[in-house]
Image (cartoon, rainbow, N blue to C red; front, side, top):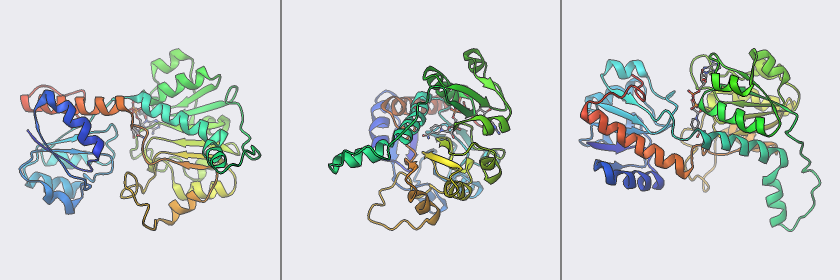
Length: 330
Ligand code: NAD
């Protein structure tokens, strides 16, 4: 099949071309993000391979249908950027890679926790500058502290395992209890208890109507003072303006973000020679206790291999009319 890859980076090219030695599909990579303005880049491709910040709303899906696109293959797990009802209306099948390496994201959440606590980014800069003072770098032991995990699916489960092994008490909130977490001894509690008792809160729920701005001013008010808040799920789970206010009042003591609600057009791009005109983002950058990475939680060799293999395998199944129910969204 002919497949166009939007938002394609060098590493997508590399991993998909390697995997494609087995599948022999016709791949074309474009760097542009999928938007109404870039649909015209499609030539005769009937499959669009898209990523987290590509736009797949009603307008784009209707344009894709007009161009004869039959399949949207997301090379990611989250699908909050897709209007699934519109896809159904236009008879476009949507698939994703539901699980490629939940370890990669859970380990990145842990990385943000550790780096923020021990201010590794600050000590790295100090040592490079010949400043060997440790004043101001004081951390705390995670052992004995409570972590609240919101969303205990694949990634939340792994972070539960890791933090439990570090001696933390793990409490959790999810609409559905994960039996694997229950086996570990994770305590499911109501959301207000998570807010009230957690020293660290890590977000691992999907973004949907019920989780948009789940962490708003009212939720932040219920948290312990100086709480550590980690978000590797989707940016819009946090109301960023409310988080900025909570940083100012010191309600949030540490903020680790791998995702940001207005990350489209910002994350994944090299804008080092430009002025960033997002005042909320610039405000976040001004706090020494905020650590932002640009959506790299998924970015491990293992994950890229699995993403490429699963995506091409599923496209081949689609071509052959084989059942895709595991990865199919509509
Ligand atoms: P998953 O589907 O296994 O788990 C998501 C969990 O969220 C489910 O258990 C679900 O019940 C829960 N949930 C949904 N609505 C909720 C609500 N209102 N309250 C509480 N819990 C709720 O997904 P996963 O593989 O663990 O991934 C979690 C999220 O991480 C993805 O949806 C994606 O947005 C994000 N993600 C980020 C990266 C990254 O690079 N930073 C990579 C992969 C996934």
